[in-house]
Image 1 (cartoon, rainbow, N blue to C red):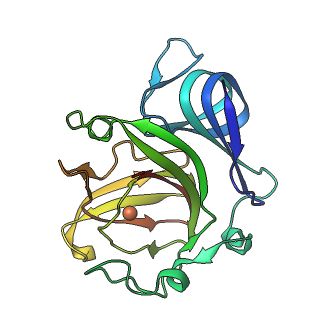
Image 2 (tube, protein in one colour):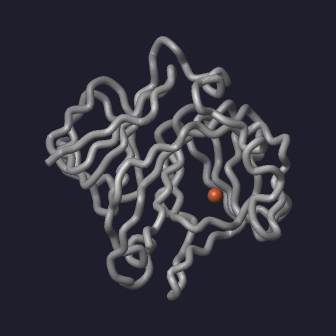
Image 3 (cartoon, rainbow, N blue to C red):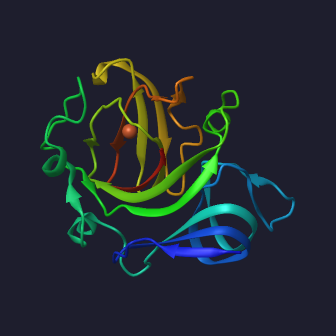
Length: 238
Ligand SMILES: [Fe+2]
């Protein structure tokens, strides 16, 4: 049975989470993110998959089948700007985490980076080893959470390395980058993934150890223009 849940409202971006989508009509223009771990399929011919952890922009098109989707729409009348951070429950990250975001990781507290309210969308079960491109590890339950971020043009959002969840990012407004580094130092850049509207980094940056930990490289988001982007987080449940 198809179930849906809205993301916390703001004036600029609306989001609807849809589980077990069947013949879901996307009216107008929307960023459609496959939040499942199996391919989704639109009704477009020739039939091609929308892989797991990826997204596209659909316009007046039907999704035939998907394990789960997040459908994001921009308000035509109110193009998202820095004003999104004045919406309810938005916080400046430095005000919340201070400068210590993990052992050995310094966060510049004056970074102009804002986080929107985080929604718990679902509990999903999948094999994290396989989902991350490794060997089978058996099914596990994950809490799927989502929130938006905002940073103005030219912001380096902070190089960090530790997460106890799988994270995936989708560009919503503007042009940004997900970047990998050898160390917490911008001069050690090793990979630079440019993201335009509707683009999701299709390969999560983490791998998984045999003990079940997620291992990330040093990484950060960088905003080339004023940017709004979506973070999806898969938190493994005990
Ligand atoms: Fe991260």
